[in-house]
Length: 239
Image 1 (spheres, rainbow, N blue to C red):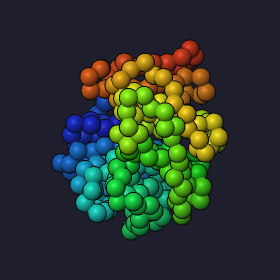
Image 2 (image 1 turned 90 degrees about the horizontal axis):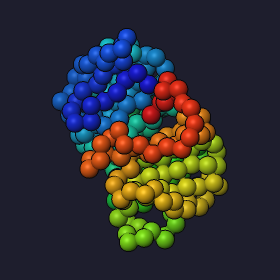
Image 3 (image 1 turned 30 degrees about the vertical axis):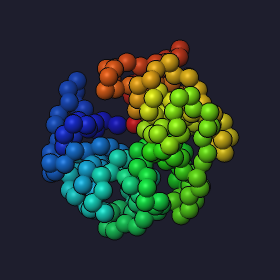
Image 4 (image 1 turned 135 degrees about the vertical axis):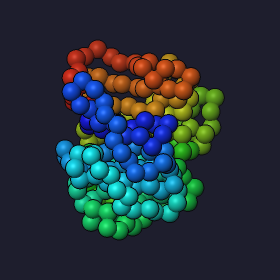
């Protein structure tokens, strides 16, 4: 949670004592996501199938896998061995990056964001309003169904960009045109909620169970946030 990515370049920054220090990524490709399993071991992914790994807290990064050549949008590390990578397919490694396999593929989807409740149960969201769920650590995936009552937009045009769960049943998915979808039954059904904006909502996160943050960018400053009342320690965040 102390490493961030400059989304417009191949830059990684590590939080120091009141400052951010640029890390050497070893690639010129744009990096899109980063995830750490502990203070030392972390992964970063980006365009042109770049998958980087550090084992010393970000001081050094090495390319450990190059998958199919597709851009990678998201990475979720379950532990130091099992890591999921998301782009046009879902890939995974179970041996810390020595090799990988395809966990899920349709050939027509861009997978943008993922959230795992535990080592077995995870959700992935993507283009065309797609949501998939695994309950067995990626061995199999089931397709979830969104509420089709999306005003003024075809469901296939609603690209989902962020997902987060607060428990095994309750979660939110957000995306294009300001859409928010909520489930209270572990993804069996997803109902639409009104955000009050038509801009893209890039991510959703909870601090405890009281604060919902919906970050909006591009046409609106990324600092524009909606939230309900509550108190949150910034150190609790782990995007």
